[in-house]
Each structure stands twice: as structure tokens, then as C-alpha cells.
Length: 144
Figure 1: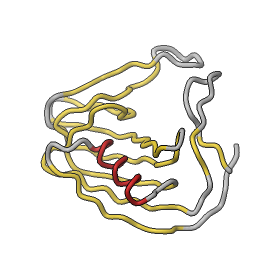
Figure 2 (figure 1 turned 90 degrees about the vertical axis):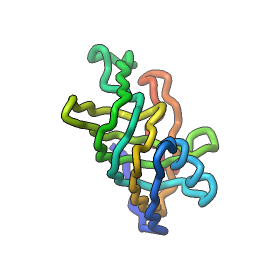
Figure 3 (figure 1 turned 30 degrees about the vertical axis):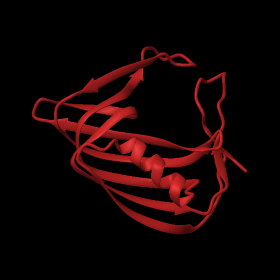
């Protein structure tokens, strides 16, 4: 385990509108506002999304299993924003469900807002970035 102690810098209340891509909009906001270290929560609805719903087997590095949906689902999510290769990286996990079913995982590709998604971002005063680790196959947070 490794950790750093920090403090809150700024707080953002964000509305992502119908048809907009949640990950793209959060990335654009992070670039515009120079957010390099933050966590967020969100709620609303998605009309479609592609997400990782787990590894195929319990091995490192994992082989990812992709899922997608193209119907309207309510979403609750949490994530963070840290820099990776000089750009903000959105890491979003969430649960999306409707009467037709539920899916839980890591939203990495398309995540299209249906009507509205509300996001509350808390920027932190913590020096950290994501650095790709070939051994484990992803980019964990590394502290500066």
C-alpha cells in the first residue's frame, strides 16, 4: 500500500446533457479546468455504453470481458481523474440498471447520457499520475 494525504482544492457541479458522451465531456472539462487529481460521483441515465465487466479469468495481467447496452438504464457511478501520459484519464466504475437488467463495471468506451447525468467532482491537492505497468496490464496511481 502507498498513500498521500492532501486537501480539497475546488468542487465542480456538472450537468452532462442528452446524447453527450460522459467520458469525453469529463475529459474536456479536466483539460479546460486543468484538473489533474480528483474524485467524483455521478447519477442519471445512460442510453448506451460499453464497459468492462471483469476479467475472463483470475490471472494477471487480465483478459478483459466487454459488455454493452443500447437501452436506457439508470446509473450511479464513482471515479477519479489523474493524469496519464500528460492527459487526464477518467476512471469510472458504475452500476447501470433497468427493468431489463443490470450491469456493473468499468466504463471505458462510449457512455452516452440519456436526458441528463449529474456529476460532482472534488479536486484534490495530491501529486499523482497513472503510469502503465506491463506486468499487471494497467496504469495504477503512482504518487509524486
